[in-house]
Length: 435
Ligand SMILES: [Zn+2]
Image 1: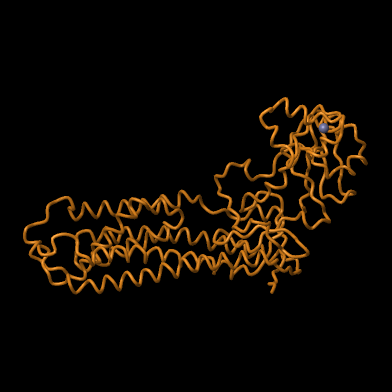
Image 2: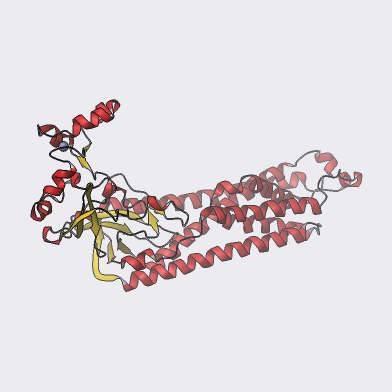
């Protein structure tokens, strides 16, 4: 069974102009600090370091105590570990603080005001991030609808399976945590009658319901956060629809899609290098890196600049027609350059299934038998680009400006772009914007 998606082909500039998510670290640290500061402030407000007055021990245990105490523990846990949760901390913080604010208001503690202030601060921070996500979803939706090619494409079986597995995994986390939370609360409720009404002196230490309540509350919060994440994904994918993006080669909102395009540039396949007697690439490479002798065989060998067959002089001695007919050879191209892509060969095209902003970054894919299929073994979502990412990791490599020998249009060879030859280096591939 195949699913049909619309093929969208965004303009390179509009794709690179899509809004980027604010840095995850900032989102996380602010949310975590709100919890930490609130917890410390509440501790000070309640003078938590003082010994409890003697009459306290004559008081009796109430159900409300369980909620208050478990909320304090949960807030402490998040104060110590909140930064580990990444972006999830943004949704987690207001829930944690609200869970403390309610019982502490009911028993009129001094700290209630602080818990509420923290809840409002955390909820505001969540709203700011949610507003960003909504804006991004809107921008992606607009781009998807203006760049719709009007054609549809089916997904390959690997892609369908990967999408299903992803959905199943995130839903089973959410339901599993929810079920665990329900069991935890039931256990806490069942332990309650044994503790309620007894004095604190009799209970001595922590009552059993406190421990169970803390565990149940922690798991409940994790479950809510996971549902929150599923909800955003659902909303984003629903708004944007079933689309496959035909991704332009420019820095867009995701990263790591282009690594495979430049991998082999500047190399000669080993069997080719070893079968040409006058080729000096293997010899030169072994002289430079004697330790890597075992590596050759399945990968290419770095082309030597001085090789009579694959060197720079050889590249530059090719006539324009010769260069065009050889253009798919990896050794012609600088190591940093992208390799030319065929305007006809669909297998060269990079696709992104279902990209819907940071809530769902999409599966990288390519055309296979007319369908969008994932690369074998690569069934994970692509990473979103963060605004502070090191540029060299994602941006189209920049070719040198000086020392240009000539520029060859590769269109007659069916390749979308130009070759730029250099006096003292290998050629660089310049894509056209439509590629
Ligand atoms: Zn050679």
